[in-house]
Image (tube, rainbow, N blue to C red):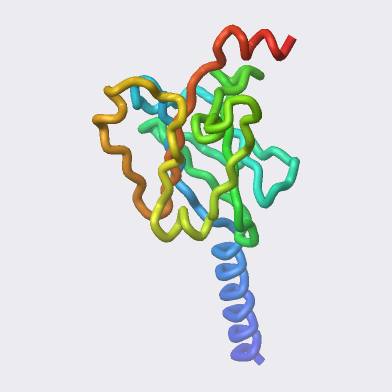
Length: 159
């Protein structure tokens, strides 16, 4: 009887461990200023998955180096990110969505690709040659995207 209880306990413990590890996928996020290439860390990251409207700011936890650890559900296959200035409601402009300036659209990225090779989002903002001289790379499990603050015209559209 004791042996059977012990086996059942081990089975349940194993199930709990595997279900917890498959619940979330961890991705490292680096958000860089498009002009300078420096990490922007004093923001709130807004995460959306699989073309859903729900936003999840609580999924990202800041690291000491300014990057963030993002935990997303295992079932998620696509992710998009945005961020607010200094924890306010004003949102940075993602430089990957500005290719068509008249109608910037949200860009979605494959979580499988981020986990296997890493992704550096395109930069359609920077006219600076300084950031082009830098080589921005992403390791497997890392997503890097560039942003800029809204200009006065963009800020006026909100009002």
